[in-house]
Each structure stands twice: as C-alpha cells, then as structure tokens.
Length: 594
Image (cartoon, rainbow, N blue to C red; front, top):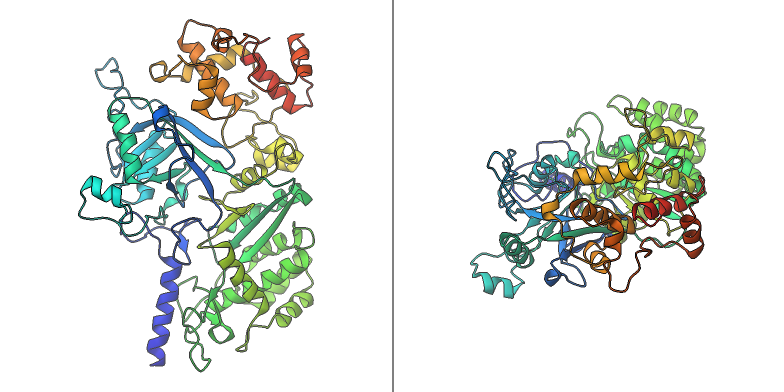
C-alpha cells in the first residue's frame, strides 16, 4: 500500500509540473519555455496582475469604451508599457499549415501585375481561426508571414454565454474559458497574441469579409507607481529556461542600483497538499521531498534512483533564499547572490556536483559569501531533515498563493507577470517602462532600445550603429528610443516612411482629432500616420495639420511648451544633452512646423 500511494503522489507531482494546456491535445515534445511549466490549475482571470487591452479603433461602430474581453497568450513577447496599433487582416484559415497563403483572406486587396491578390501589407495584425493545432503553431506561422501580432478567433461559445449559444444554435459549447498556454515549443515566438471570444470575433470577421478596414490596438500596461521599480523572479535551481537570464542580468541590476529592487523566489511544491506525506508523517514521494514530505520539487532528470533528486533541488533552493536574505535584501541588488548563482551554474550544475557540499563551498569562496552565515540561516529556518515546518519555505509558498504564481519561471515587474521568453533585454525594457513618467534612471534613457545593448550597459553610453556605421534612429514600439547627437534629415525620415506605406489601405480623409481617436497612440505614432498621408496625397503635411476647422497650420500636436515653441520657430535646435527636447524637436520638424 505504501508503494502504491507513493507512486500516485509522484505521478501527481510530476503531472502538475509538466502539463501545459494547449489548443490541441497533442503531447509536448520540445523543451519548456518561460511559460510552459504549469504548477497549478490556471484561473479563468489573470491572478498575476497582467493588464492588457484589446480595442477596435476603426470603424468607430465597433469601438468599445472598455475594450474587448480577451485572453492573453502565455508565450510570445508583448511590448510592455506600450501598444501595437495596426490594420487587421483575416486569414480565413486556422493557420495550421506552415505554408501560409498571404494572398488570400479579407479585406480583399488589389491585384498585382501577375494577376494575384496582393499579400497582406506589413505591418499588420492577423486574425486566424481557432482549432486544428496548438496556439503556438498558429502564432509561429503568423510570425513567419510578418505579422506584428495575432488575434485568434474562438469558434465555440462559452456555455455560460447563453446569448451566444442561442444565436449560434450550437449543440456543443465549452464549459471553461480557453487558456492560451505554451505547447512546450514557444521559445521562438517573439510576437504577442490574444484570443477573442466567438461573439465578438464574429463581428470583426463580418466587417473584414465585407471588405471594410478594421484597425485594432493591442496594449499592455505596467503599473507606474513611483520612481522605483520592483521586480521578482519565480524559478527553481533546476529550471533550464531562466539560467541564461540569471547568468547575464547582474550588470543590469547593478546599473539600475537603488532605483530598482529585485527579489528572487524559489518555487516549492507543498508536499502535504500533494499527498507526499503519509498519515504517520512518513514521506510518500521517495526522493522528491525534504522534511518528511513537506517540501518538494520535481526530479530534474526524471530518474528517481539516480542523478539529481527533487530533494537536492529543495536544499539548493533554501540555500539561495538564505543567500538573498543576507546579501540581497538590504539593497535589492544582491551582487553576491548573482555571483553565487553564476558560480553554481558553472561549477556544480551537473549530476556529479549538484549535491556536493565541497562544490558549494567553492562557490561561496568565489562569490565572497560567508558559508557559516548561510548554514546557520538554513538551520534556524527549520532545516531540511525533520518532520517540522521551515519558516522560509512556508513564507515562499504563501507568497506563491498570494501572487497567484501558476507557471515558472515567471518574472513580475510592478506585480505584472511578463509573458514570453525571459531575455535580459526584454526584462530591462519592462523594468524601464515601469517607472513613473519622467523618473526613469539614466541607464534606461541611454540603453533601452540601443542596438549595441551589452556595450551600452557596460559603458553607460549607447553607440547605435548599423552595418554601414551610420547611427540607427527611428520610432519603435516596445523601446523608448533615446538618441543623442545628430538627428536624421527630415527628407530621409519621410522617404523611409513613404517606402513602407500602403496607400490603398490608408484613410487620410480625417482630422487630427479623428486620428487621435483612431490611433489612440503616442504623438510620435500619430505623426507617423500624418507623414504616411502626406506620402499618399497631394497635400502637404502642414495642410493635413490644418484640416481641423478653425485650427492654425501652426498647431502643436507634440506637446511643446510655449518657450520651446518660440525657440524652435526661431530656428534653434534642442540642446544635445536634452534627449526629451531633441525628440520633441524632431517631431516638430517632421510635422512641418519649422
């Protein structure tokens, strides 16, 4: 009986750690990505503080003040703190075939010289049908076509949506909301995606099938409470996905200094809830747990008899918690913690040395950590050997529940969970977008969006050069591109914009106010559309700015102060060391106001 119950408990623990809910029921065959290791059942609403928005800006008849209800993918790389606003094309396909026909779908486009309908003009958001394959496969195929984002149209009503069920006459409905989980292979997905419920998706598809332009905004918010950002990582010592991040992020943490506070958390399974402790206090999960089955981890090599055990992972987790408490909590940077983790991954992260005390001592020495302090912390917290509670593990498990951590690794910035790959630059960008506007530290202003990112972090200065040696400059979402030095010529900027625009899909018969309603974006993005309209019409940019009835052609769409306005109109450029004024000046020039 003991062996039978133990086997069940082990199976439950392993299943809880490895199951990923995909759109199809095919088994996972690839290594996990940041969001693929599911540790608990996923709630219907986001418990991790994610705040995203899906809105239809054009046509106005489909605009909703609160946006559209949707679900966010647990893979991909959303541009946190910003948005993507583009025209939508309906693929009229489930996009399961990797050979995507970009010359079909709706709205219908003009034919090219070969007589075929033109391909979807980039950039665009692609709407695809649900079903047939995993969410990841659909988004990967869309990404290969050049899509900036994906909206998956649900094809089945929720059973709770009686109006949808009644209107569609469906005999089959889905009892629970779908989860856009990773199928285990989503590490290569770099674009964001949403799932839209059937009743809403049907309306948009109908509009597109009628050959009407639809413009959608996908937006991701980060709370910006003050001039300090807090970010947390939930992982385990055996997690393969976060290792590269943990090896490389130390110089970023140091550069952010006291303007950001980092907290690493170790994900621990509650052995009692997982039935890993018997009624008599006996451990029922073999080598997966410590403290007589109280605290557990999955077996990294899936071999309960050899190699690294779950108990070894639990022990190393407690060690890292103690190192952070003594060397990281005081400043939120934790240089010694980063050093220890890097040393451990280099020296001990293998089957021969993972559980070696001597290897750990070498890591202590090279990371300048006093081992006796850490061992005392381990002992004082409750230790690992007896059937007794460990205060530090209990705190971690309570924090897991409170934060709603359901996958690992997961990194939170200001309580918002980041989706997609856990890369150094994506986390840095998210942290920089988490500051109250105007309070960003200099390292963010200088390096967020820098092409030579590693060099910028090391030298605290961005040298953005392309292959020709020319400075790289432009408007981009996801990065606050701060540039100093020479600005590009307005001719080059407009020429580049005109080369990329598709005039047939552009609506320029609008006022600036209407543009602001449609685009719902930054002033720079509005200026983008203004320039595009100038490319496609016979009117000048100043004419476009003057379309508003009673408005002067010397209107001020970029928020320039009266003093700046006077300075710019007198032909004086912005100071070279004032990036904010430079960007306004560039916008001022582009708008044709000087």
